Image (tube, rainbow, N blue to C red; front, side, top):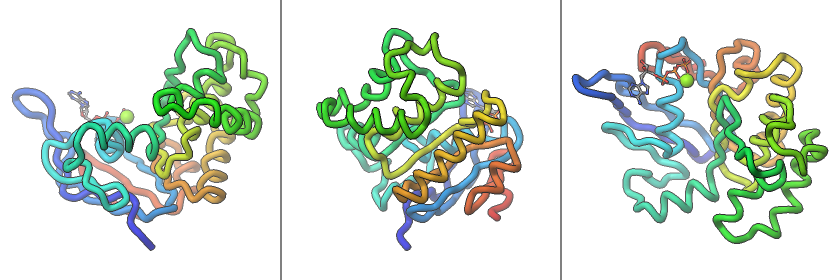
Length: 223
Ligand SMILES: Nc1ncnc2c1ncn2[C@@H]1O[C@H](COP(=O)(O)OP(=O)(O)OP(=O)(O)O)[C@@H](O)[C@H]1O
Ligand SMILES: [Mg+2]
């Protein structure tokens, strides 16, 4: 079993005087794992998720993805990693309002120049997430659940090794939240995508292989 995500002695502080938000956080997640990150509001979940996904940097400590240290990568390597190996889903979908559903999903591929090849895969994802009918719709014409499923398709279109999600069901009703979790389970088991997601919902946390619980910027329990 190889290690997918590794964090070693992460500290993060903000501001002056420094407010310590993450304190001595170490974790290790195997390739193919499906892990929930839980904890009260303000416990540091989003901050940790941003740091292990390379969207933000720790004040000290090291993060490795597939054995490669993010701190040692230059900006070109980091960009390549973000574009090819990492998918990120936010609580609010942040689709671009002036682009259609399909255009939003193929956006990440435009940057890497394989736009045409991914269009077919994007349509396949839309179909399997029940949002094929949103192909030519703009985000303002989609429901919250549809928008979130389009955003998940966007995060997956490059077939990333890692999917990070910050309360992906936080703004959805139970039925749409369940659909999102079903999609996560399916891509985890079918494609072996390693998933780390933040949730406040104990039922969703229970469906993960592992739960990492945070209290006051520290890992309190792994179960
Ligand atoms: N950019 C920032 N500048 C200053 N303080 C920050 C910043 N980002 C987060 N914090 C602080 O760090 C702490 C942890 O925030 P974080 O967003 O990680 O919590 P969380 O566990 O995700 O909470 P929630 O469940 O409400 O989303 C909070 O006290 C927050 O105010
Ligand atoms: Mg948060």
